Length: 193
Image (cartoon, rainbow, N blue to C red; front, side, top):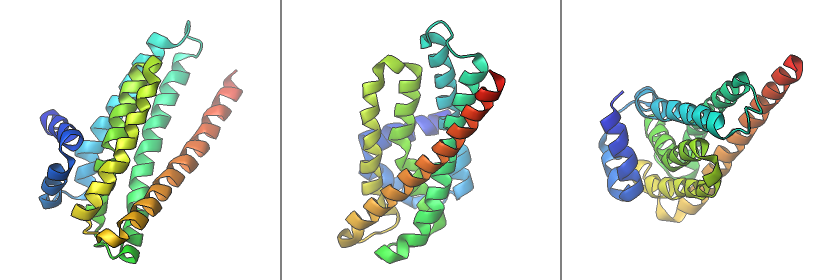
């Protein structure tokens, strides 16, 4: 895990996304390398921030530490599964929008466009009173928009449709996985109480 690489990638995607997508497009990382070297460390940061934020801000430990830990793990799993399956499904629809079908490129697009969401999630979990800052997660849509043309070479006339359909796929997968794991969490604590 290269912290400097992750920091620079996050900073560059936020500050100068077009130039950073150009660099990303030239890289030959596989989907597994992208997940292990970029997504996984950011997801671990979210888990740590969630645990710390719940311990500090939960009113008099309203919930047990087991609940706090389970919630953090569920956040990790939901984000990871959402990125993974979104990339696979979006890769399958690329040709419908005259985009380049390339599983590694699609993983680049999905995982790196999640950057704003991941950073915002870590920040708002660490400092829950500043929840309004979650609006910054919408910047991920812009990152996806910019990256689509560069990484998958989506033509401008197909870009709106591709981004909208991809966004619906990502939101749908995230919602389904969250609902399933939320039921699991509810069931676990209903049994233990």
